[in-house]
Image (cartoon, rainbow, N blue to C red; front, side):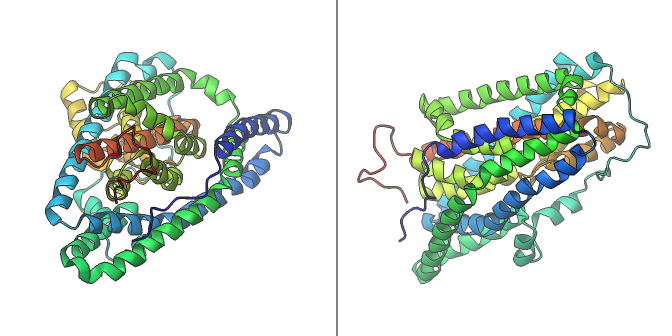
Length: 427
């Protein structure tokens, strides 16, 4: 069987380059907005091609990588009962983490009340947001979850649909056993190749980070942070609290190693933060989890499923943002209705891909269900990119901790005092 795949190693140079690019992008965008306002729009459109190109390269990788790694992870388990056991533990953790994230957002926005404190101008009720405001139906959810064609799902990068097909495919391979060994070897080889391609794509990450920040700041200016400073600050306070809660929950099972894990995934977290896309960090997160000691079969099963069912940062933002808009309009949402909102978001938040602004679609649908003007979404658009950076980074942290915890439950986490090159090897 092929050895675990790793992308080319560049040490801390990539992390340093991303940090430098982040600050340079903010500076370039600010200079364009302040000193060349007439051409700042054109500059923003031109420089935005850099992150667009990078994210397209990442999307090029995601579908074959998720399919290959998830199928291999399931097939290597070999036992259908083991797949069911791990799947139950994984979904159990995801549901609990989702409940914690949504509840935390709800509690914080009720306590801080940023919508009442900021006294923002209310957008006209008939203003267009560009997002679908209709209620999410069960039929739409099923359509978004179950593919009619895996080729179509891969072409559109529908991660949840790819995950559903991959789970069926992997279970079938595990049930057939040795007769599918040649397919397993081939898919393991595909995963090796795609992770190598990932290493090449990551070389363009600093340019993407520079372009993303320069474009956003050139269009909006840093002044928008001043206008929405209270809302942004309180949301990031919530992000910090959520990180602490997730780390504390992880420490129950991982002990002090949870801090080592957070440090281990700092590069993919920074990449997700800088590009506002947790999807961009998926390949690097997978690599770092395996270096941390998570077995290949667990990492390749839990992580891709988490990208559809465990977006902790995005879920916290959903309750925070919906209640913020209600507060701006002076709409009181009773506690029973808030609990109903939380239950609805537990369902509708599943399947959000880790791409920029995906949560706004869920928020728009939720506003419609609670008779909150959808035009209130316009209040968020100016700063949404800056908020998306935080929630994307949080999604990576949440999925990393979840994967390590499930590995620990299954005895598939290499001990801290055992080096990667030791004889014991999880596969």
